[in-house]
Amino acid sequence: MRYLFESPNKPKERKPENMASGITAKVLEIRKESIKNCMGDLITMNHRQHYIETIDGVSYYDDAQAESVNATWFTFENIVNPVVWIVGGSCHNNYSELIETAKRKVKAIVSLGSEKENIEMTFRGTVNEIYEANDIDEAVRIASIIAEENDLVLFSPACKDQELSSDQRGTRFTQEVAKLNS
Image (cartoon, one colour):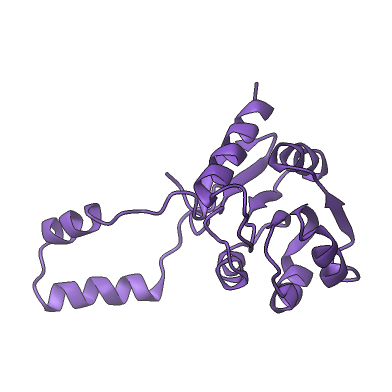
C-alpha cells in the first residue's frame, strides 16, 4: 500500500523528523524490534490518501475519507504533481479555504453531486478547467481524459454524500480506475 506522501515518481527522502525520532529511540535504548512491532499494530484508514495505480503515466489516488474541507486541504499539502481533482457530494460546504491551494496545485476539477454549482462558483477564475459529472463512474472517465503523464487524479470529495458512505464511494472509485486498465 502506498500513500500520497510516498510519491511513485520520486525516491524517498530523509526527513529531519524521522532522524530525530531515530536519535530519540537510540538515546532511550528502544530496540528496533519494539518499534517495528508497534508500527505493525497501527491500523491504516481505508480510502485515505491511498495510491491505486498508475495508468499511462497518471497516478490515481483514493482519498474518499476526506469528507471535509480541512481533510482535503491536508491531503493537498502532500502533493507536488499537477492534480485533476474529483470533488463534491451532497453537503453544503464553504470551499473558499481551498482556493489558494487549488491555484497552486489543481489543473482541473471534476465536480459531483449537488455541490457542482457551489464548486463551479468557488473555483471559477482559479482553476481553468471545471467539469461536471453525474456520478463517480463518469468522473473517473472525464478525469482520465483530462489527465496527462505525471499528473495525479485525486478523489478527495471534501464533502459527505447522503447516498453513499465514504467506503462505498472509495470502492466505486477504485473499481472505475481498474476498468481504465482493462
